[in-house]
Length: 192
Length: 192
DNA sequence: AAAAAAAGAATGAACGTTCATTTTTACAAA
DNA sequence: TTTGTAAAAATGAACGTTCATTCTTTTTTT
Image (cartoon, rainbow over the protein chains, first blue to last red):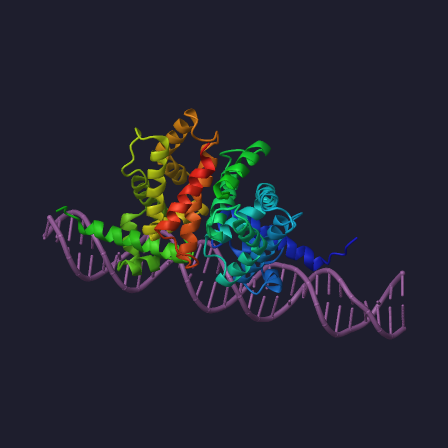
């Protein structure tokens, strides 16, 4: 049994409230007072854990991004074949985005708006390094098209975010079978 | 020579200022006073043209979206073959996103945050109807994979937005050749 | 000279943040 | 175990600022 301090509980509540409110209203339309209320805490208490509103956003972003990245490479082993490794990572990311909807939505918002410091955002990109290395290997082995990591990302990973967004809007449902078909589309777009 | 009223000039300046400031700071971090200043106009004047800030956002969104859509289907003819028609539309959209950066960035921000009324957003989706019809035909003719329009969009059009965003961040350059290669990736992902 | 357009100043509400105070916790002495 | 107390954590109210919007007056157009 891990001992969790009371402070940590409050901090977690604040992080959770931030994610929820930012997802629904956007960062700048989310007042500190509402975050405090949702976390059952006084507004002043937030400033015991975070320097200011911007620091709160940056910290939450980096934590969620770290969680995402660790999920993305679960059970991945650089010794795998390119195709096998790519499928593993792709499915991990898709699973995360479709299961941890709140966290994925939050990241999507951070990555698509100026709410996060440029420095924190750069930090976040580093996490995908192993995927980029896998792609480099794939190109060397003649398995993947000679495309830059940006293009590879654009056509394989980025589309998942779109599917997550519209599924969350209730416009479609992505089940196991749809996911398999989407994976094939992703792979077909970059394989030689 | 088309006569352009002075009012129209002021309104255009307001629209332009809104796009510029929202792109750089986000909607909620952009005060009406700054929009007015950039348009060389009094804050009060904005309210002669728009009911309030939300109405300003909605109107700008719908106008830019309409411009985008008309650009997307330029020189497109429903009588074209599926592949030819798709290539035409895809290239149009890519050209728009890489040339009309300000307008494309603005749309990207509108589509990825809660800054626009849900109603206006739904309105905006309607514009892509001809592309959806082309896809339906492609599936019937056995040229395209049996994927929902959402998935087809996710793997062909949506990636362009990502490339535009990182090119705008100065992280990469998308030239003519890169665009051709990106198109092939898009087509490969959905063709049977 | 009447009407329309535009302006700047004013208003009231909301926000991020801080401050003075109270409550809770940790722990040593009885 | 109880009590006393100092530090830590938490609070609600308050501050100064900013913002969207409106009001009254001035300028421009017809």
